[in-house]
Every structure is written in structure tokens, then in C-alpha cells.
Length: 374
Image (cartoon, rainbow, N blue to C red):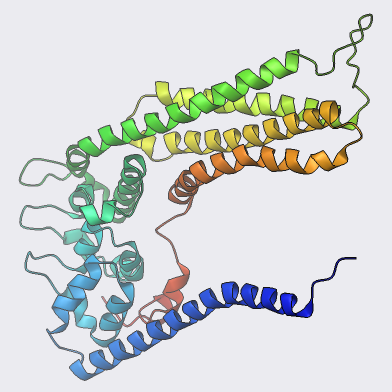
């Protein structure tokens, strides 16, 4: 049995530790810096006192940037900050909606819900919270999400959330420009809708080409039996081989999943593209299409690896290793290229942004430790 010399083993372990311990130390360093920053913030708020207007500028900047820790500390030390207004007359609730600050919104939601103060909130143009949610988010907020379609999806999620918050009658109220919240949303997002449609169809078209190619190849392999068949009975000569069974099962699975993926991508290309479709319908089709495409590619590589081993590797089992290595190449390529898109789609579609998040448990103004009254 081959043994590594002690010195080589020591060097190998040292390299492994250097690779793993380095990031751990970096995380620990950042955690300590984070705790130190929170302590300094708490000290500053303590020195400024509970009723200090000096909070306002930092307070509103924290809301715009969605830095919920700063907002939490200031609200805990100075509850009156909930009523602060910026130079344009907007308060924390209005700013959190306009700037899509979901962490701040989740932090103060229980305050909004209990005080009911949001029902009378309007700006100088008679825009209620629905109108503000209908506005297009700032560019720095949109840039957090990849792809125009997912940006539009996030905008729709915000609009639907605020619709639940306001009274039904407020959804039909008009501002001074004679626009309802829905009319504001449609006008503000018409360019993003066009960009989202282009992005969605371009993504589906590129994936459909790959799916069509896979379906063509595996269908041809299915009707051309490797190794030939018995001339009298038509039974494949390799029928009893395990490798042939693996090929048959994987080839059929690749054909079915590839055809499903192709149909899903084509349904996106031919679908109507209204605003609501970008909320769940179109992203869900793209998600399942990509999943089917991954499965189809993997099954195709396994099928062709099995038949290559059966036909060309008789009495040479060592050839299984290079076959597996080469089969893994196309799988790794398609996963590397498409997995970020799939992750973004799943996170955006199925991960709620408005709920009781874990980070709220450590906040000082959460539901369990609230200090606000109506």
C-alpha cells in the first residue's frame, strides 16, 4: 500500500487548514467588527438622548439604504423618531416603501399595523401608500436583482404587499393627477415590462435550443439500438447487459425530461406578457424548464457513458474513469452557466420577503419588546 511520507502529509494538512481556517478567521473578524459597530452606535444614541433632532439625517439615510440595525437602535432610544419627516415630507413608513427597504419595513410593520396611522398618510400630491408602492424603485434598488423580469417581479410583490396594508377604498383613490395606485404602477413600469418580456423570452429561447438538440440526439439513439439486434427476433444483442439497461432507462428519461423542458420554454415564448404573469406564472415555467434541462443533460451523459463502456470497454474496466470524467464536462458547463439563474429565480419566486425574519428576533423594537403606543 502506498504511504505518504510524514513531511508530505504535514504539508498537505497545513494547506488544507490554510484554505479552510482563513475564511473562518475572516468571518470571525467581520463578526467582531459588526458587534463593535453596534456598540458604538448604541453609545452614540445614548449620548444624544431620547429627544434629539440630530437623529433625523442619519435615520432617513439608514431607511433609504435598508440598514435596519441603525433604525432599530434609533427607534429604541428615541420612539418619537417614528414621526420624523424628511425635507420632502415623507416619514419612515413612506420612505421604506418608496425605497423598497424590506428589512426596515418588516421591522416596523407591527407598529404600522397596530397604530393604523398609515390609513391617513398622503403626500402633497395626494399619493397614499398604494401610489408610492406603484412608483418605480430607485435604480440602486433595482440593481440588487439580476434581470428585468425578476426586478418587475419584486416590484409586483411590493405592490401586492402594500395593497394588503391599505384600505380597499384607498386602492381606488386618485391623486391630483387623477391616477389610482394601479394606474401609477402601470405607467411607471411600462419600460420595465418591455425589458422583462425581452429578458424572459431571450432566456427561454437560448435554453430551448439546448433542449431541442438533446431531444434530437437521444431520440436518434433510442431508435438506433447499439450493438444491433437479432435478425430473427429483433431483440437487442446486449439486452442482458447491465450497461445496456442503464442506457435504455437513462436515454428514455433524458428524452422525456428534454421534451418537457422544450415545451415549457416554448410556452414562455408564446405566452402573453402582462404584469401579473411575471409574478409567478412565467418564472415558475422557467424554473421547471431549467430543472428538466439539467436532468435531461445528466441522463443523456449517463446513457452515452454506459453505452460507450458496453461497446468499447470490454475487458478494460479502467476506461470507466475517463468516460465518467469526460461525461461530467458538459454537465458541469451547463450547471455553471445556468445554476445562478435558477437560484435567483427560486429565491425571488419562493422566498418571501415579507414575514417574521430571523434577524428581527435580535431587534429591540420587535413584537416581543415593543415600546410604542397608539
